[in-house]
Length: 300
Image (cartoon, rainbow, N blue to C red):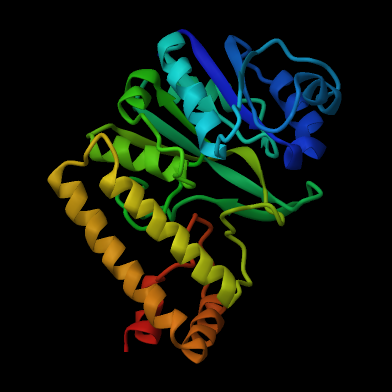
């Protein structure tokens, strides 16, 4: 079981309305034996303290001029892996269940990378009665080439494993998926806790939506983000082992064909979105892209 634990989040102006609730959920943790680390992107410490209602005792990592959103996170990770035994990630617009840190610490005694289910709420914090996570029959590691359930809100890493997943390229948008993919490819053990330990806010600022209805523009934009993820994973450093490279390469080719066919045929895109919204939804990231149940819509 990891001894010295870091709890990390990134704060930024769009998350400011939610920081007080996030901070209260941190203070309510049953396991308080952690070091708090905060990445700061586009805010001052006094602005963060005003939004939270008090200034937390934390290790602060600041964005530098010209930084991408990933750059400040990567800078913090590089520092944390040297200072801690494990890192618990949270998003500052979400809420931690009181047992989140304790459950992550216990899970990391059995696996290298862990994630938990998320109870989905709307922008106002109202519970939507939906739970994010893989289907019971799905191995969360096996679905990684296609979908992701290891986010920077619900995952935790042993520091030694996180270290070998770095560096994260500054231009990579889906850094959560990249880290999980590198961990999986390197042979790390991945585990998923089906009990929701976070409340996950779905609202206009989300990069990755999981709740239908979807739109054609969103689906094509999501496909482009997924293709960018594959490019980061397949061309980055450290290089992937051959088996993982082949699996991701095949997934990339599939999504590229999906994107190109639907981008060139608005009527087919409309049929795909209609069929997608009619499916029983699965609440995992990027399920809307090249959905395997709808291959007849875009392949034929």
